[in-house]
Length: 366
Image 1 (cartoon, one colour):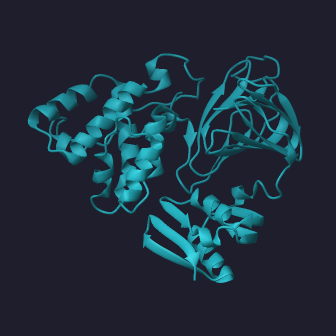
Image 2 (tube, helix red, strand yellow; image 1 turned 90 degrees about the horizontal axis):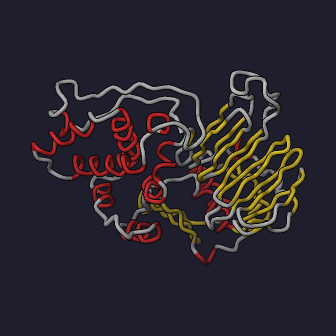
């Protein structure tokens, strides 16, 4: 996947002596998104192996005491290619998520054993510290290259809108990573994680991309399979259990699980699917696209489910006491300001909000 923008590379003070007086290696590069796997290393960005190496250098210079030979070795590594410099920039960006943590916590988290420590093990370790791990760290451990070099992405609590070259409107919800792969014969988005709302453009098969070719079909690839948009407005969300939920607001889509039978969804319907098949469609939830306006419309939802949704927009851990989990909630809840939403819920249902820290919040009975 090519990078639309590559910013200057930050070098830690401990490494600056090996690079000369400036301490900064400049990297410049632009280009239209290309399909994954197209072109060489320069077109596809840093390889997973390079990103791993860059992460090791970041941790060494941030949390160890590098020797003179380490600084020389780092300078040699960084100067090998533009891809090495890009990998360093990406590593610094991801590890920067720890800058907002209380002093010393980032170091404790990053020193945890990386081998054999899956997402759940890492999460348990973070809870043992009394705080949740940054989502960026968990994402890096699961699939680093997609998250680091996705063509467009959002952080926790962030939303982003893009207009693609064919006029398609793409809105990304919190913690989302998408690659854009448009060719002369098709238009394809690759949703690695998170949630998107897509309003497809009326592609006429003209312009620099297509050289006058015929209409190009539009697909959204997900970990569970693909979704073909049939002139439509649709929402696609990757769920925590590996399934994908698709909601059709206009026209229709075709759901194509990797190992299952395809199914058509029409406007006003939604369905979950995984790699093996598609569940029976049901009526789309009212206000399913209100997240684009920073709102969640709850209709007789369990309080635990409302808090789980709010948790998607917060860094850290939001706990619901089992004693109040089944309380029913109806109304509009802000996901743009989750602290205000928690305060409103507390006032309405006589709840107690206990903040162990900025990153650990527990909701229970008053």
